[in-house]
Length: 338
Image (tube, rainbow, N blue to C red; front, side):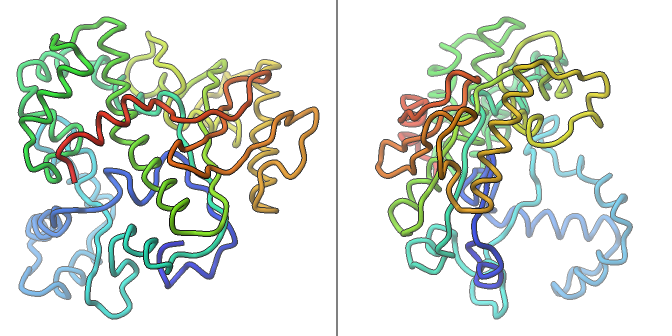
């Protein structure tokens, strides 16, 4: 919806747990270019021109390229995304010729209904991987000052990463070292939730409110059922909450990854709620054109800086709220991160 090449091909957009403003969504420092050249050299490609790089890499087996991803990690598996979308300024036919915020502010984005949101503990896409391996937690405590900017993705966007690291350790960990405790697991999950997901979604919602005329529907999914993707992310011994992609369990058949899954009656009811909301939005641009026994409360568009959202907690608790994790969101806004 942001590119002039594709914006006329859609009538509405659903963006779950990520937007163009997510910290991992755009390359801010030519890191992708540097990593691409490094990748090309590893396959003995000429790097004299971009055309030579592209033509050479096109001939390389995709599996061999993915096998090399570990070469771009600077600390364990971080930075987690060595290749991010780039802005191609001044290039004819570029898919993204300017920053997404500039596109929205200029009125060039598609004027269509927009739905986005997060799960309450989206950050457990990453935190279980830390606690499932004691060596990673040990190394993280030892290397925290150097590792945190890479892990939390402000290594290339902060003017003062050491200051940011100190603030994060104080705010979330109370200056304590990480242990195998529920406090540490919850704190790390909150950091990933806030930096990887909440901040970018909130920025997108606010910009769409300010610079588009179409409704913006913001949701938070807070239902944890009989299964969770956190079981697959490295530490199945702890309840990390409602994890990244957990809403997909109720939109698509999860039996491929969870072959023994038998949905509870509440799981089935949540499936009916989510599929009804998503189908309504896809067909009409409004997730609740009517309220009924399945969807008893109206999902209203976000309209103000309070960022009103639809909280889907369980079958009996579906309602409008505002200012999701507001103190944590304001904390990240206070940091010197671009």
